[in-house]
Image (cartoon, rainbow over all chains, first blue to last red; front, side):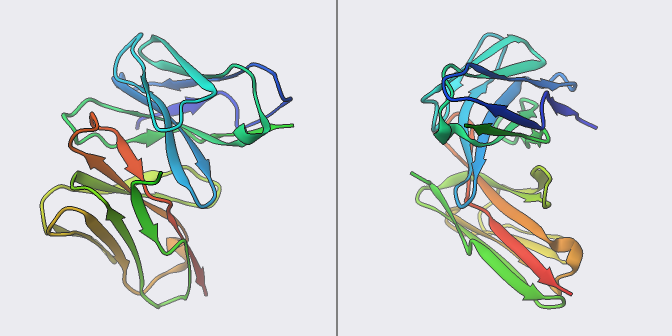
Length: 114
Length: 112
């Protein structure tokens, strides 16, 4: 089975801190994604990557950046955390299948910014 | 803003009753996927629909893709307590590089 591992299940940070959320997948997937999940808003795409060192903005990239130095690892960075970034963050990966890719999600990181 | 709208946001049913959640897109989709997220869990892929008017079944779950490929529905017959969770549709648009746009989700609770 595909395994997508997120480094922390719960994280508490202070406003202004730099925050790193790490995600690793073990199935050699080309595509990796970061979503945030908020009640009533569903999953919103922050950034995604279709290859190493490649990144594209999703629908809500403001306040975030990403890094993909290795195929299996996709990091989400909050340069200066703010309270409105308190949320559940979900990492996902998929194989490249010409538009039919299904996503495999990690268990999520619940981030609280105080 | 949200490009895939999903209703209702919440649905509470008695065990044995049926349940339906609906998704609507403002634009034509190349395909649509459905995911289930159990309480405290992460979304898990259920199914993908690709063809206009397509209907697929998984035991008590029936998935439909509209003729215009702009809407979809998930129907559960005779709900069970194991059906509890949030159901998400996720659409893929032709000119969006393959990325998925998720609906807001429908949270289903089932009273035994």
